[in-house]
Image 1: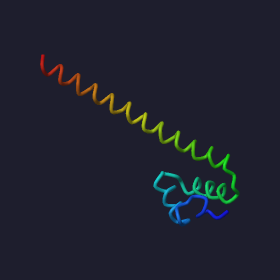
Image 2: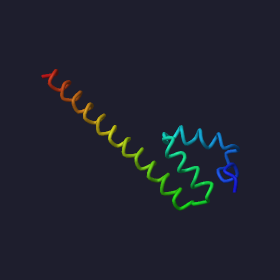
Image 3: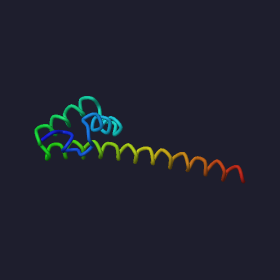
Image 4: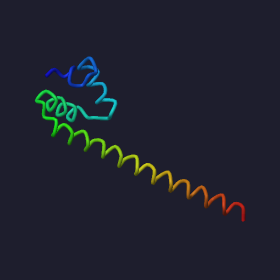
Length: 82
């Protein structure tokens, strides 16, 4: 099965761009393409889910950092009003 048909993006380049936009490394992209070409959807799903999970963890880490800053700003404003 051709990569274009499988991904329904119309071109291999579009699939590669999507993976790049999703933050996939060159190595990860090569692994994903290899799994697509071999029709190894089980391993492909695992790779994509792992990457998604890593991205989500980054978001959560950044949210915690924002919360820390928000708390600091709150404390500063509260102490300023005293």
